[in-house]
Length: 85
Length: 248
Image (tube, rainbow over all chains, first blue to last red; front, side):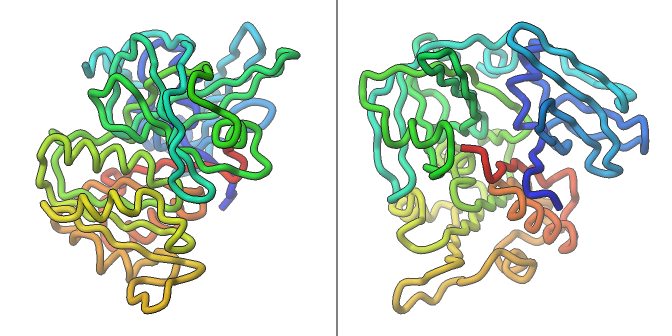
């Protein structure tokens, strides 16, 4: 267990900046193992960028890199994201 | 109000410090007046941003301690000696000072009186803060839903909201402390880290399908969530919020 690990709640503000909706209750499905869980429950690791990882199989679901004026969001392992509208 | 809290692009706004209230030797509650605050739900947080004169910015997330339906919001912040933001918030801020914040943020780690129970709240140190917003919201709504709080602190003088929690007990709320490092003379309560045996004694049985909210440092949250699953609690009913060792 990595004591620096956080969860989706920690990046809720950053993600809401991008998607303009509350995102921790959105349900993501992992393309690796097929598990579904709310974004608030996924594991988050912060370094030069931010990685969201599946709490079941550790696959990288989403990667985010930010500078002063732009945000890059990659979805290497997210099959679907179900968002309440 | 849920709609206001749910939708919209986040914008930074200036919040004015109204009061700074010591909770323990390392923890203070900062009361902010936020113009046009849209309201919030218990368990949500805000992002706080500080900007130095040279333009360097530091940003952290802090749980909202105050219950919904107040024009002012309260953040309870633990001072971390090597932190970038928390020493400023707890030691430097004075009434009238302004900081930038945005929110409310989050919807996963949220409980409202209408959500029902039974409710199991497990907090480690300043992980109590979003749980306290839930307890205050519960009290404010006159709810008597079965609620157990298991609160781990280092010592009796480190227990955040100690007197207020004692005053709120009853009406279906049970508060159980564990003191992990030092105990006052005559202490008969728990004196160890939260473990499965303790959770089995304090938590509603899994058959009652309690809603569990666990907040604290990452190792604390991992240990508690794992123990709850081993006791037979349904993983989706266990909501967690972790903060890291360098979160301040």
